[in-house]
Picture 1 (cartoon, one colour):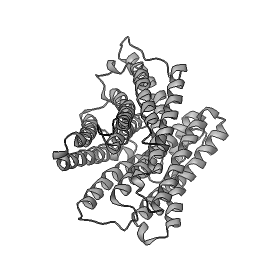
Picture 2: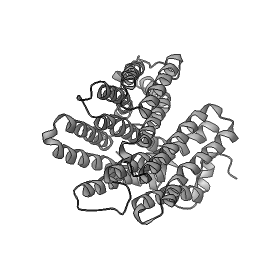
Picture 3: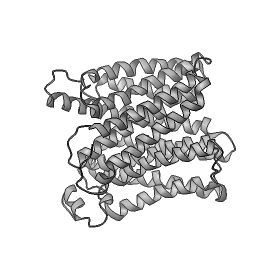
Length: 401
């Protein structure tokens, strides 16, 4: 067996895309985010119908949250965990088998109308279960107990997917159910925890390298842990009682604390490098989403809960994952950690997609136009990632923007 991660990767003689976890999952995740959006637009317009038991909105929500995001999580964790534990990465055909499980989940959900409900759930849930087992094995073998919290959040995310399937089987509108809310809450917590490590660390590295005096507060200090605890409680109450006034007040409190946490990371000093400031902007959608969701509960006529959730789903999850995918792909491929014009355009397209989607709630008379614009920019962002970074992900050396 190879003695190091690099030797393990070099020993693989098959397709380069299976030489590291981020390669297949980032590429396929981005392609799925773009393709599923196109399919959903055709479904909404009545031009296309999937043989799925999910209504179009529920399918859309499920495939972004539990389809796209699960792929990005897999790519990130399978790349980060070897660094955390000092263990060898998953490469080759075992990695390919995990990719096949993810793809099988997308297929059975799309065709769930002609398949037994239990089979659909089992196939779709097999991917996060196997992924969690792989991560647990690495944590235990490497005695890296600090990262059990990441495994716990991944397990909560998988349980939310199970609840989503159960709610759909019970005939409820799963897009407005507890399963989706718990899935969003788990995702927001993962961004809060992992983002709380990487955003200040990457910011510090860039500020030091560029000769700037500003420095972010060290990650995961007492204040950070207090913010995470309050965020967890607020999200849990919201997921269970989404219309309770106390939940709204708690989320507004979460927003205030998360803003204070973000300001400690010196994001305003990073404007010269899109690869860094996009992390701060992506994280900023966590307090924005908490504020919007809180206000939607306290003042029901101000903004709908569905629109408020898009601050988290399209903004925090969409932009933060895209930021991580671009940075990780550059870094683990030996490229300079700098966002060129093409990468900056990808970020701007997604920011525009989020802005257009949120504006639809403010300008209902232009709702359909704004939805179409948002979808176009969303597809442009993720297909743009596949175009700009696809060759880099599929082979070891390639220049990118």
